[in-house]
Amino acid sequence: MFCPNCGKEINDSSKYCLYCGHKFAENSEDEIYSHSYYKDGYKKSHTQNEKKEYSFGDVFLKGVFAMLCVLLCLIAFLFLKNFISGDLLSFDKMKYEQYIENPSLIPELTQPETLSGFLENLKEVQTFLELYMKLSDDDMDTKMETFDKYRKELLKVQNFNNTNLLDGNVRYQIPRTEKEFKSVQKQYSKVLNKVGLMIVADESYSKYHLEEDARFTYKKFGKYVPSDVREYLKLRAENYKPCMHKDELIIKPYKLAQRIGQYERFMNANQEFRYIDEVKDYLFSYAFIYSFTSDRTNMIFLNKKVFVKSDKKFLKKYPDTGLKELFSHLISSANGISEKQFDEMYPYEYQKNLDAIKPEKSDLADIFSTVRKNIMKLKSDANFQYTYYSATNTWGVYDPSKPLKKGDILLAQSDNGYEVYDNKYKKTNQTLQLEENAKFFIKNNQLFAYSPKHLQIQSLESSYGSLSFRTISVKAIKSIFPDVLIINIDTFGEYSVQIDKPAGAKTYMLISTSGGNYEGYRLNGNIQLGELSNMFTISDDKVQVNFSSETGNEDYHMYFINQQAVQSSEQDSGIEPTVAN
Image: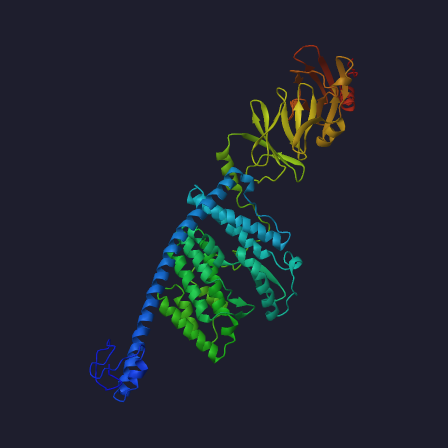
């Protein structure tokens, strides 16, 4: 630096001038720079260098600090990712095991009553399907059978529209124009996006229906399916937007031509694909639309130019296409081609049906019926035979494919009788004891127990989950066997009885209103035994039926006679009719 008193250059750290003895004050930089010998250029340069040096260091330190922060954040992210993914996987396994332990929890895709109810149900179905595809030990073919069922049922939602499903849930005005429809579409998207559905306008914007969002299906299930199915789902996701509305093309011609090329290439590379018919239908549909869109048939010069450019791009990108003849013709044609020409030039032979992939009905089926059934086969050795459905107060033969609900009951045959299980397949403390040779049977959606020892029929009734038997009356028996004639054996006063038989084959049933002991009884004669041991059918006009018990205390002879037929027969033969005592 320079001394402000004498102007001589001295050491920067000096407190006194070596030449004149001037004392320097602390922070006297301004005083030094004010000396006449100090050059303005040096001052400016010196100040700028100091500022630059300080700025560079500051930026460098900030940069190092920022890099450290980013590195720490990256390490924390990787740690949390591994931790969270592992934790989520454990949660998914726990949730899936709950389904396995209680198959009745496995959802059933049900017919929608309201939009909100349908969406909740579909979300539950999708949740289980994802867990099943990810965690099940079933082989891939079995998994894909279930996934195929899901896709088929999802196609049926196209039949749910604003007249049969959405109308009761509309919180917005019914649209009349494209602008109004887009407003409704935007509002519905908030709830539909969660389950991968979209609202699509029909011919008139006042009508619209639900449709699958292929992007959702690919994102949610693409990682769990075979590679060819994954590729196809991705192709569907990339081309999820509709290409036509009414007679107008609503995407660029080249975009539609590109779809055609992609579907054709996929079809040629996957001839044995499980959805190959679906791919072919899409390919034909897009090619047909491209050829006959109004933009082409009613084209002005600009439109023709756009299409010709698209055709040339297509042929250049797909030189091996089987549609080359078709696209070449379109390039040279001023007005497109006729449908007859299209059929002649289209190179693929199969059913050209634009509605082939659309479902005929909207009735939804149970996607997981087979899954539920297989789980039950592996889960228990219990011999389930009958199911009580509390919602309808009915009984049915056990079907493991049907989900159980709260209050439902299962009967499983065991050495001790029939064990009673709840809707979670857990054994209760109830056991039903049937007499020897007794049997259950179902009539009119009710479960009955037949006792051959006492010649009685009892109904099995449920009251708050507790089962009990109740002997039914003759009138009740007639209601469940309307074509059977009832014979009360308690009314027999003698060992032999004559019964007036109607003409033709008739079925009879022996019962005892008192419930006496008829253990080991036998029926014999010219009869045909029925579904219960106390039922028999007589075809002849005159038959003797013998009824005897094992104890030998009861031995009845029943004579079944059609009086008119027998008398007529005896008169014709000259024999006088006789009556048994």
